[in-house]
Image (cartoon, rainbow, N blue to C red):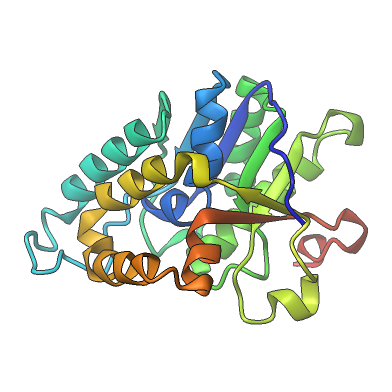
Amino acid sequence: MLTEIEKEQHVLVIFPHPDDEAFGVSGTIAIHTQRGTPVTYACLTLGEMGRNLGNPPFTNRESLPDVRKAELKKASEAIGIKDLRMMGLRDKTLEFEDDGKMADLVSDLLDELKPSLVISFYPGFSVHPDHEATARAVVRAIRRLPEEKRPKLHLVAFASNTDSDLGQPDLTYDISSVFEQKMAALRAHISQTAWMLKEMKNLLDQNDEATVQRIKFERFWLYRWDNDKVSEI
């Protein structure tokens, strides 16, 4: 069932890599920014260990961090983000960071911005170790707050067991009205997305239902505080 995107006071988006925002939430972000809602994007790393170097390759391992930084800025501009924070952690090492310090980083953002909504990954359902470390830090930081002061927490999940273990999404947004902004964000991350954009366009031109659903609708789950697995880790 489709859900209307609520008006927020401030949205805080926390992901570990450039392009994490483009695939799953860039349409939602674009709708918020079109409404004039402040959106802060805290990107924890520059994705400098990404395997893709363009297709055909146009960068190398040494220059990739600068390329991805520029792509992140361009993607953020495409969807109206004015407050982009590059947090300076190292790609593919977040699982080894101190859990308390990771949560402190998020707590500092919460204290400064006092967002009404936080968007991130769902712990246990986001596959990549950096995704999981980010998701745990977000949940831990928000758990520190009194329940009445906690922002809403909308989470992206895409592990193979998501539907069986979490059930259907709690929120499904039709982002067709900002589809071009979403595509612009994806194109901005061209070092990582070149291989898929041509295929995606072909499938969309054919009105492939699965591709339409994946690109023009964005899905979120609410965190189950009554079944808080992160507190056990």
